[in-house]
Length: 144
Image (cartoon, rainbow, N blue to C red; front, side, top):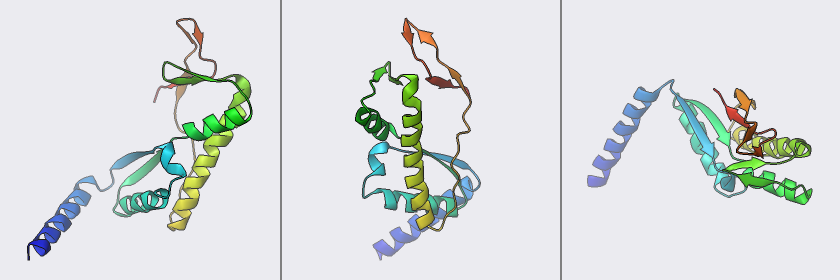
């Protein structure tokens, strides 16, 4: 009987949570370590359930691992400076390719859940420039 009461309490908690957060915006970061993991389909299923419950969802996937690999495979030198990647201009097409590959992987999983999704970059940013003698080239800082 205790299990039944506990289950009922949990269901009430979930219903209250849905009421409070219905139509709210949830931004969910997917760490790049999960992209190639067997856990990704389960995570996407959970995100689809969150959306189905009435929350608006923005997924912000990480692509660091994929970017590292594509730049290393192309033998393009890059470094992390103060937590930010610094790479030459010639790396940008490869960086965009890696990021798009990650986004497409996630989109395919949402399609598998019969969910529609949109890929986009709606972030306003301003170039970081030169800081303490380090040229951050194309690195930008979000302004939105």
